[in-house]
Image (cartoon, rainbow, N blue to C red; front, side, top):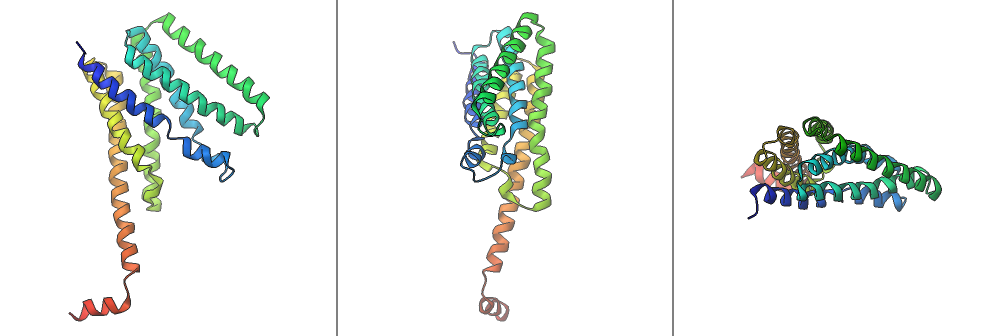
Length: 227
């Protein structure tokens, strides 16, 4: 019989897999030389990698197969983007990219090996929670820029909606296995995702209203005033 926590982790894994490919658009632009390397979310990628390494260790110790698969697949996808970042950062030279990539992968294996060997589930889960909080705080910083510039386009609405489903799934997973360190970051992630969605709707409607007013002909305005 399937445990209810497995259902939540499956939904979380699917949404996590979709979200993992969100950096494709900025990387595509930089690879095609349509934009500069500055637009790449390398900080977020490294934060995600650390988060998934920590949670992967937790799920291995805790014998949670589906959640472990989610972390491992996330680590692989993160590595692909980080290796691409190395390639672009080192001006498309293969030698430095390969050396940096090998060093990164060896470091990851070493970190997970030590974490699993140490097997202090509570401590590692709270370390994972801290990394998770850093990942979820970044949308909170973006919302300030959206409010300042009144630009809804700064919010990737589709990935934000998927992130709501992702946060709900992993929040319910945390509740079902009674893990506080899983609950707290996903409450925060859900909060920021809802705020971002609300901001997108507000500024989208605001921009549309302004556009409609600008497109109104003078004769139409006079007609409305005289009737």
